[in-house]
Amino acid sequence: MKIYIKGIEDERFHRPLTLIGNLFFEETKTCFTEDDHSLEAEFFIEEESEKVSIKGTLLSEDGKQFTASKEREIPAHFVGKDRLRYVKNTLSYVYLTLLQDYTGMIQKWGILTGIRPTKLYHKKRQEGMKTSDIHKMFKEEYLLSDEKINLMQQIVERQLEVVPDLDSLANEVSIYVGIPFCPTKCAYCTFPAYAINGRQGSVTSFLGGLHHEMRAIGQWLKENDIKITTVYYGGGTPTSITAEEMDMLYEEMVESFPDVKNIREITVEAGRPDTITEEKLNVLNKWKIDRISINPQSYTQGTLKAIGRHHTVEETIEKFHLARQMGMNNINMDLIIGLPGEGVEEFDYSLSESAKLMPESLTVHTLSFKRASEMTQNKHKYKVASREEITTMMDHAVTWTKDHGYAPYYLYRQKNILGNLENVGYALKGQDSIYNIMIMEEQQTIIGIGCGAASKFLDPTTRKITHFANPKDPKSYNDGFEHYTNEKIKILKELFSK
Image (tube, rainbow, N blue to C red):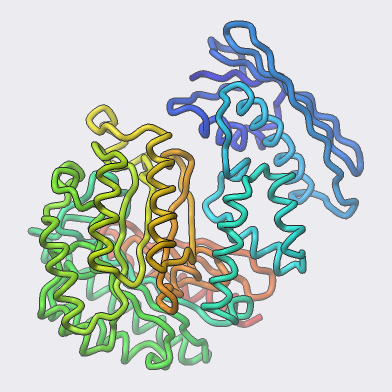
């Protein structure tokens, strides 16, 4: 679908309009200069000191015309970015209304296209807005459905139950440790992940740099009396390295990080069942780490083969029971809605198999066609379910989790996510991941160490976020880990000296 948009010369409006168009059509090209097109939209914007009025028309190839308009008051003290945001949202509102009328397709998330909708809910709550007013704002200004507003409210309330001091954790930090190795790379994956076979030299060099980062960052935190809220080992698959390497890594953590015994949560992703061994589970027990992920993604063997996961369904179940027998009492499992070749029947089967295991938390992802993934680059090879089927699968996940005692505790959304849906983490009571809440709601600094690890530095006073990323490939990381460590410490000094 090619859409030509007239009347919008300000390039700051191009991206939000493009994102709205992408919600409705799989292959969308939005252009702002005249070209061959299937749809033509035109907008008229009138701004006054305390008001913006926008009218829009949409003309289809067969001559049908649709119109929409919106007028919003702008607070007098809003200038610059705040004022621009009001105008952008009003323009998005009008465009979304036009496309909904044209397609008959209702977007339950309204004009929200960002990753973290609950962060906006928290922001309004922290500003003192009443729950009823927050709901009214999302419904009237953002065009969200009651279903999605209620989901956000449920998640925010659960988060505040799990982390009652969420609003005051900006003076603490969490740590993300990136280990960029996996047995194989999945077709949908864009994480920094490298097949570990034949790369032992890279692994050894990488771990040397990682230990350096842990020591240097840990020393700075100790010297400045900064507490750590959570630690999360991700990747890649952190259990791809050997049991001996894991043991040395956790020993480094205990020696280097401040007050490890009082860290609220330490998680190790063991997502690939083919990396889990009794020896590695013994190491986790030794260091009192009992929150892990074992991710089936699907319980259909043909699907696992299609997406490049070289373990069996039986192996997932076997390793889950092994972990349980060895004392792992907080296990997360992931399922993905919309994997190639899967429909409602296959997803329902995955849910029924999950019921036999009852992990403490279940994260339900909706497949997203990430730009750099093998799946996106070869879309013709991967047949995925229709929008209607995807929505049905999500509805079944919502019903299943509720019926089995799980409640949603975090969510995030992605570009090109099937059905314009969301990824939701569900947990049994008391088993929610604090790290997942912290990374999604951005209420504190997350220090990323290791290969491909992204840091998000939150200014405790202004709440402004500064991003900093380590290189994604092991060689670049190995060549420059000292530099990247020093740069992060420099940012920490600026933030926490205020």
